Length: 360
Image (cartoon, rainbow, N blue to C red; front, side):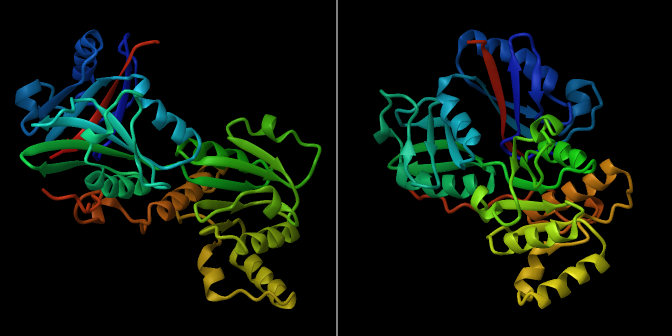
């Protein structure tokens, strides 16, 4: 149900954010967090739910073995928060066990895919205790994919087990338009962890007040949007201005950018008119252009209300970001979440963070 890296944040009152399972363990984790907060030391707990009806007497229907790292949330996690807020990928390395080595459970390091160096959060931490050459590559891979896994290293009689949590930056979404149908798209995209910017082309509208869920709002024009917006190969765009000329100019500007997804609101016939307009202007669309344009936008879910349409759009965005072909899960063979193959090396309010480090 959840893959390695699933998290739950608990405070001293037992209030939680997030989940690790579908409700099978959360009450037990709340109780266990009291001891971790009191001792201020992390614990690695294994829950065997292969016979959960007999073990817990709850009949909740969970199955499998789950290993959970329960640890106090300290300042050593701040670099992860800083990187995520800045839109940067980062790999968080947490020691689970170091048999024959100097590291202790809960010791932490960070790897940035940008510079591929291993950094420590504490000034007095010993960098030589970390086998950086064996950890950087898997940390970068997991950070870029936003996945997590356990890395086991055997080096000169030392067995080091490290949980590598890849925190990918949230995908960027530009929504062009200010109509009544934009709000549901912004709302759902934000709730699905997109970093959303609403772009308007007309003054006189307070975009921040109209779309409070958006992370940012920008007023520009189709002719200057490339100068006013940073568009990378991780920036996705939804064009829904409902103005043919604005839509065409916006699509043209986006095609001149590395954006991998350009979703365009409107029927097939309208897009055919746009293709003809491109031809007449001397900017004919090639196959590479057409591959990036998704129109009519969204998945065929059959809905017609603004929120149902927004669900269709955001579902398509998630499929593109996650590189999936949408279909019913009942028709999918194998695991829901694929694991990343790693090239591992050889020989003040107190809160607790519960992280699933592995599921069997």
